[in-house]
Length: 269
Image 1 (cartoon, helix red, strand yellow):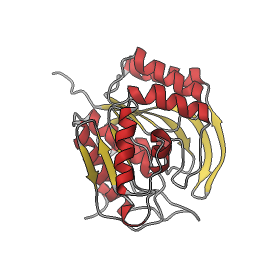
Image 2 (tube, one colour):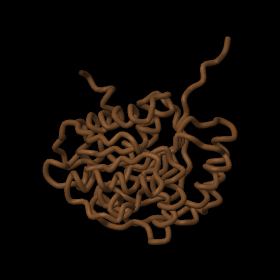
Image 3 (tube, helix red, strand yellow):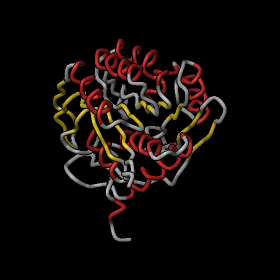
């Protein structure tokens, strides 16, 4: 009897000690798509629902070794990147992507928080834009990250469309500009562009303050669906629906912003 091969996804991201984002969110997302999750840790954060109090980066060589160990033995069907933190870590990841010929790469370009706070320096941003993003099947910037990558101010839906097309022209193969940080009725509306198809993606708006980890969850879900053999646009649509459902079951924990509820499929209907 031939043993069935289980789909495998790899997350290259940081650890969130509060369990709401980072590799913790990614691995839960992989699991609920019936995809085996593997990880390469880039940094360790001390954080909770109130914020981050400390970040410790791993050596770039350690990040590369984790990727090599996973791919060399288990193999991966899709990869997502989250917080890469430094130019050195980004360089190590980019080299591994090329050397190991890793396809189905989803880059969540963690540069700026949803509130607009910059998380990495200008050198790392330039490397991410010029080297890593062109290797990806898709890039999923939030509003502020899309402004940096496109060089355009984003205040409207037309601005989101223009930014998606501009990021594509700068080397991305496909772009999903996320509207979670947009005001009013634009909140939660995303714009997709892959060089041919320009689409506005909208699901129902879920009113909750507990949205921690939505960006990580979305990009992880896209990678999981790619690992399952879905085409890229279908993977994006399914993943957006998954995040919407997870927001409906967001967890009201801690004194700050709680995470989305990844285990909603287990709850009684």
